[in-house]
Image (cartoon, rainbow, N blue to C red):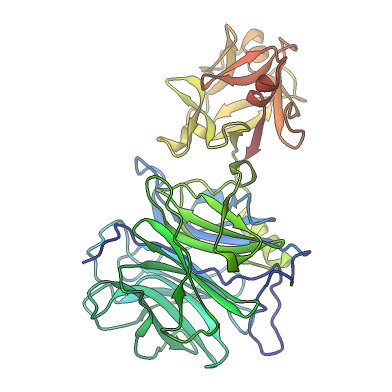
Length: 458
């Protein structure tokens, strides 16, 4: 029935850094010129899946970011709300800031990966500020014997209605982007085709009113392809890019603008690659440096929206920061610290079990002004050096163990905005990776300085 193997995502309403309402009540839409010098925080919504299922949860998860690039999961990366109707699980959540300043939250009604499920409904909540989720309901979009995947919404001022777009199969026999219109997200108009390029597509993500043009990115054959239109009328969009197709395939596009730069995110089997451009009209994207962005742990098929600083502050106060950290390599930024068979190493994200990459940076066992790395998955064990190699051992309470497991955090040797870690009892040596294993070495070359530099994030 469908050529694409996974349901995905994303319709970001291309906001500049602003979030206020315009005089018409519609959300202010960013452009290249407007908002380029301002920066607002952002919220991301997602569900989670991990390779061995340990971190899989089909509830709504939240993360926040001050720059739209480095994401901090909230509520210890646990769900903040879970559907009680339909399948009892969600995929592909989406937040829309409404005309009155509150949010509507929508999501695909699907728990797990049964792509043959035929739900005609989507999950819907109302939320004042994403701290509480009220008036849960299932909203029926159509009566066809097919699905309603990856719902997104935007305000169509010409109709004085919200448009809900989603992926479904119509009489053409392939997936298209459908649309229903609504004023209250309780009743909707009859469905109609919003975009059908003549082949199977899913996952619409839009940027509205960018220099008078509306952009729609979608998934086709494991690539992200762009279309555009000067109106929001169904049938008005035309394809203008050849598509981005990284090895292994991709889905779930998200268009997001931050501080004058447009980003196109995707979901490549649980990894969120990102591209950037200063001009959407060219359809040309440059891969973003993985050093500058970090996705939430186990995140899948996300939504991104700008939020006021007060909403950001209240979310962090409500749900809390993670009690653990992950450490990312500077010169191989798709790899993170982890332990495997009690050996310290860096491996490519994602891997299983993901908990092997979570650490508590606690006061140093030998010096409280330094740090020690306590394993989250094996809390009686700490990273310590033995014969200069890092391993995960049980704290035996000896002075030697405490010294071996203590490190002074310093400015990154390759980049002072990152971090390096100097051994407490071998102060001429730093933690570095060598052939993907963690060890302590004397550092004298540019390569070694890069090997010894890491980010401490989540």
